[in-house]
Amino acid sequence: MLRLLALLSIFLVTSACAHKPKDAVLPTSIAPAITNAHKTGQAILLYRYSGSEASEAYADWQGYLQDFKLTDGKEFYIQAIDTETLLSLTPNATQTEDFSLFIKKGSASYLYDDIIVEPQVYLAVVHAFAGQKLNEEDRAFIPEQVSVTATNN
Image 1: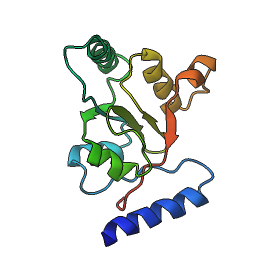
Image 2: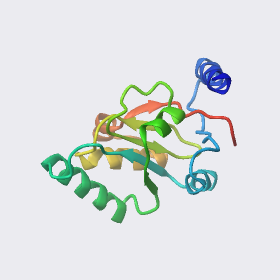
Image 3: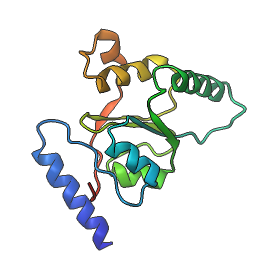
């Protein structure tokens, strides 16, 4: 409980003082592969899908995710995570059912609070992580910017 309060305090202080997005600092409890990907500057996509695999929405989401993995997302580290892990990374997250969390060292982090069924969402994040100026379409599809917090470097 004390550690949770300390993490929350760190989050509140860094959120209140931040003028530009802070680098995500992943907790040591996160899988080592995710932590290593972050330390090396690799873009990361962490997601959760909790619905039926027999639904049309699932088929659309899975298809777009697979396309992303094979094209613009081939350099991303991509992994499913649980709600507890999401909340350990983004304590203020309001969506815990289905989500996609995008993290890259040196960039803002983004949380999409549902399954992604529009490939423009992925492209907007790729452009943002590449430091490109976002065009009108990118700005329409970029997910919510979030603070990702924890205690290790």
